[in-house]
Amino acid sequence: MRLLLVEDDPKLGPLLAGNLKQEGFAVDLVSTGLDAEFMGDEIAYDVVILDLGLPDISGLEVLRKWRAKENSVAVLILTARDDWQERVDGFQAGADDYLGKPFHFLELLERINALIRRSNQKVGSGLSVCGISLDENRQIVKFQNGEEGSLTGTEFRLLRYMMMHQNELLSKQHLTEHIYDDVSDKDSNVIEVYIRRLRNLLGADLIKTKRGQGYIFGENE
Image 1 (cartoon, rainbow, N blue to C red):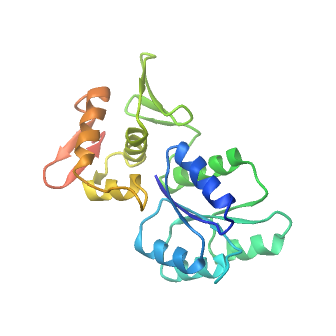
Image 2 (cartoon, rainbow, N blue to C red):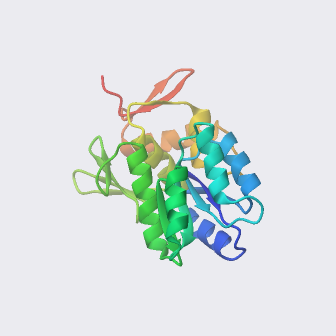
């Protein structure tokens, strides 16, 4: 899953970005409203974490511009804990959730995961598809017989995204855009390598290839 983190605090921004990457997210960090607006227009993010107090234009204005362009990306706004009016303004502008500062990282993480599941119409706190379950905290896959399989960071991000989009045709380009951040080397051909590894772990039939189009996870026959 690829996130846009909009935070101008020179300590908090990199700290949050690093923690989110450790949790298996691809993260693009920007510190201005203009950069945020541009990135949100150009890239199909899964979630945006948006601070409202930015140095040039406010996060609220950025959000309004996105919604005016019918950009429906899930947005979690960060705001001062006691500023109820800012929270109301955020919801009226189209925010999906908010979190007051200061906050605990684990709460932020759970809110992000909840937004992602809601956006993909997944219910519950876990992710279980086609007889396998993904332990997002340990970044491993669990099988019905009780066995577990380890995943690299990229394998985890790829499998999580495909499980979230079961039975959808996903091109290599699309997968690349959602599992790598803006500074990564985005060679879409590398996706084939990770697909092969996941097939070796999960079984050859769970990820199907549509020649010249992409991949489908758990396609119904």
